[in-house]
Amino acid sequence: MDHHFIEREEGFALHYLEWKPAFKNDSLPVICIHGNLSNGRMFRWIGEKISQGRWGTPRRVISIDLRGCGDSGLPETGFTIRHLASDIEAVLQHTGIVKAHFISFSRGVPITVQFALDFPGKIQGFVVGDYPAKSFVMKREWVENLIARYKIHQTWEELYQSISPNQEISPEEFAERKEEFYVKKEDGIHARVHKDLPMKLQIDSEDLDLTHGLNLIEGPVLLLRRGRRNSD
Image (tube, rainbow, N blue to C red; front, side, top):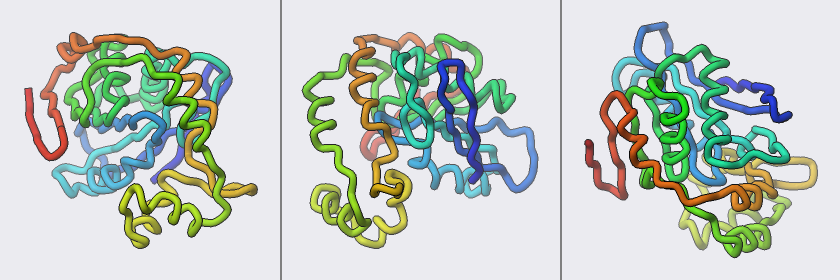
């Protein structure tokens, strides 16, 4: 897993992860887009398996930390869905990728569809993870609740005790996956998302139906919904 940074014109560094196949081939790469307030590390297991050829021909995998998430910086402004989609285009330009398959989860789905609308012809196949091709206005109460609950933990054990009752995660799974969503800094353990991001997203959020953008996907679209699989 390699780390890369791109300096964006808005004055922040955009981070993405890359898994390279064991040998070069002509297979299209896979781009992964995370959900709201998550980060590219959530696709680590997918990046490892696809790049190793566990599910067919090994492929190059890219997983992006959208602005404000993971190791990406947080610009002062610019958090509409089109701004977020532009982060995807910046990575494709940086990597020289002309066309790819996409895997997106939660709010990453409408962001990817917006990318298809703004930059047509670049998505071959699309795996849609449990979210419609729509964007919604975020409630201010949701943001205020997130800010009120934001906490810096002093130890990994303290963090585990705070989340395990709600997420039913075993100590073993927590130990394996903790650094996907949290990072240890000098003053304690932080979530891998900027504290001010929810408010910035809420201010720029809007109701948009992007369903027509699915028509721009050139290959199959696979819909994953809570244990069910449907393809159009």
